[in-house]
Structure formats: structure tokens, C-alpha cells
Amino acid sequence: MVNSLKETYNTINAPIFRSCMQEKFIKNDLYPLLKLAMPLILTGIIQSSLFFIVTVFLARLGEGVMAAGALVGWLFATLIVILFGIFSSVNILIAHKYGANNQSSIVLILRDGLVLAILLSIPTFLLFWNISPILSLLGQSAKLVELAQLYMHALAWGLLPKFILIVLFELIIGLGHSRTIMMINILTVPIYIFLSFIFIFGKFGLPALGIAGAGWGMTCGDWIIAVGLFVFLCYSQHYRSYTRAIFTMNRPFYIREILHLGVPMGLMYCLEVGFFFAVVLIMGTISVPALAANQITMQYLGPLMGVIFSIAQAVTVRMGHLIGSNQMIAAKRTAYTGVILSVSFMFFIAICYWIIPKLLISVDFDIHNPAYDQTVHLACNILFIAALFQILESARISLFGALRALKDTRFTLLASIIGFWVIPLPIGYVLAFPLGLEGSGLWWGMVIGAGSSVLLLHFRFQSKTNTFKLDK
Image (cartoon, rainbow, N blue to C red; front, side):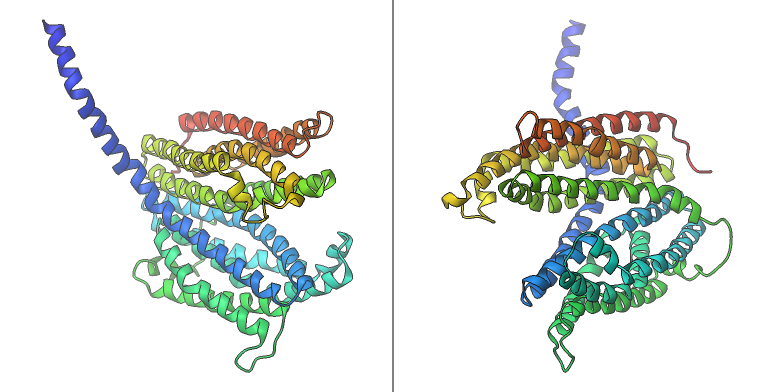
């Protein structure tokens, strides 16, 4: 009789218990993470629109100008990715100190981040100013190098404010104010577009500077926005307590810790960008249709990975706040919530890849034209495999964000070396050439590499959460 009553009680209350747990999960884990992630995702979309529109401007000046703009865009994006990795350590440290309610340390971290921005702008300026011999060494034509040099020289004068802007953004993100970042981008992206337009085409009495105008538009925009944002932070009631004391020389100094955490992340981003560039080169040796099919897949991969990186960045900040306030169990739940959110999103995208691949391909090619039959066939195969890669990659990036919150950036660098270079390249090469799978073989190698990286990062995450020590 007693057992029967217990079974009846459990039967009645089990759905209620599950409902309460689901409500608690949404309120305590999912909602705070989405609150941070959604503005960052929208910010990424807004920033992508800037580069798209500037490319359209340059395309109107001719094929050669557009090609030079694409070359500079690739070089500039690679550099910014590396430096973004270095400076992203600023938001990690700030998130921890914010969770611990340690305002004085946040001021010192911001101070040292700005000092580092100034120091790194000097060698970067010299690199931009002397880029021509490097481009010539890479086999680029003299005309292309000449155009690229005009663009790079104009961009060089905006590197200092660009780096300062990155650090200021990292402060705001570290404090968890991602909606502020979104609003700033909504207000400032039109400024970049307007300035680029008037400098490129020579409006309002200004001379038409062509490709150099794109660089000067970005540079002038960076100076205007950097000064404006710094003034805003100095007078805003939410931020002035962090900015008005940055000129103090109090100890401790955080430059060493910023570099200790940031350099591995910068190298990791560089290795990952370099891997995809290597894949492009290998695809080019297979055939033109293989290269085109790969490019179709990559044009979807880039923006989608931007969404996942935004979720991972939100995981880092949210976990940093929780760890700083000594809530390790909640921080661990946040990590797994991020993985679930990212994988769920990519699984939905995977279904689209599997069900309507030709619709996606039709954005670039007339799928009914027999001349493109081979490209369409290859693209369908690669999209099918890429769907699996993106699901695994979404889990990897989320776990990377979690480990970053635990200040473990060296292992993530090692995992990227293994997951992008040590495993996928040799396996992909064997599958592509000796076994005859060609472009599909390279992507199967990437799937295997991503899966191995997920296993390594998950094992490391479990180990670090059991042994992590809070800052004193």
C-alpha cells in the first residue's frame, strides 16, 4: 500500500518537477546567456554589412580595384583576428574582476590594455607601410601591389584608434553590456559607410581617391569613433569610474597577464584562418569546379561561425562573472548551455544543407545550366559533409569559450593545432588523392579533426573545472 502511494505521488509530481527544472534552466542559464549573446550576434551582422558595402563601392571602380580590395581585406582581416585574440583576454580578466566586484583591478586592466594597444600599433604600422615587398614576394602583379599599397597606407594611419576601440569594446563586453556594443555599432557603421563613399567617389567637393578612399574612410571613422567613445565612457555614469583613473601608475600591472592569455588565442585564430586558406589552395590544385564548390560552402560557413563565436564570447563573459563570484557549478552549467544552444542552431542549419542544397547553391550559380553540373554536384557533396563539420565545430567553439573563461588558452591553441593541422590535413590528403575522394576527402578530414578537437576540449574542461582555483 505504501509503495503504491509513493508510486502514485511520484507519477503525479514527476511532470511538475520536470516543469520546474525546465523553468529554472530557462531563467538561470538560458536567458542570461541569450541576453549576452543576441546583441553580439546582431553586432557581427551589422559589422559584416560594412565590409560588404565597401566591397560593392570598390567593385564599381573595376575588376582590378575590387581584386586589390579583396587582397587587402584578407590581409587586414587576418591581422585583426590575431590582435582580436590578444585583446580578447582583456574581457576575460575584466569579467572575473567584475564578478568579484573588484573595480580597482578593472581600471588597471583597462589601463594596461590601452598601453598595449599603443605599443602594438607601432610595429603594425611599419608592417602596413612596407607591405609592397611582401605582396610581390607572394607573386602578386605589380599593378595589384600598387593598388593594395594605396589602400594599406591609408589604413595604417587608423591602426592606433582601431586598437584603442577594440580595447574599449572589450571593457564593455567584459562588464556584460553587450547591448551597448550593439547600439554603438548601429550608430557608427553608417559613419564608416558615409565616409568611405565620399572619399572613394569624391563627393561634397572632395577629390575622388578611389581605392585609397576606402582606407581613408575607415581611418577617419576610427579616429572620430574612438575619440567619441572615449569621451562617452568618461562622462557616462556607468563607465566613468573605470576610465577616469586609467592614467594612474598604481600596481599591479596586467600587461604580462593580458599577453599570457591573449597571445595563444591570437596564434590559434591565425592557425585556423591559415588552415582554411590552405584548403583553398589545395582545392585549386584539384580543379576549378572543386574550388568553386568549396567557395560556395565557405561563404555560408563564415557568417554562421560568426554566430557561434558570439555565443562562445557570451559563454566566456557569463562564466567569468559567475567564477568571479565563486559560483563554479553555475558557471559549468553555463558552458553546457552554450554547447546545447550552439549545436541546436547548427543542427537546424545542417537540415537545410541536407534538404535544400541546390537552393543554397542557386544563389551563386544557375543550377539548370549544364555548364555548372559538375560544380553543383560537388557543392552538394561538400555541403552534406560541411553540415556535420559545422555541428562539431559549434561544440568546439563553445567549449573553447568555456575554457577561455577558465583562463586556459594554451591548451585551446594545442587543440587547434591538432584539430586543424595534425589530424585533418594528412587524413584529408589521403582521402582526397590516393583514395580519390578529392574535395570531399578534404572535408571528411576536417570532420574527423573537429571531432577529435571536441573530445580533447571536453576532457580538458572537465579536468579544469575540478581543479580551477579562483584569483585571490
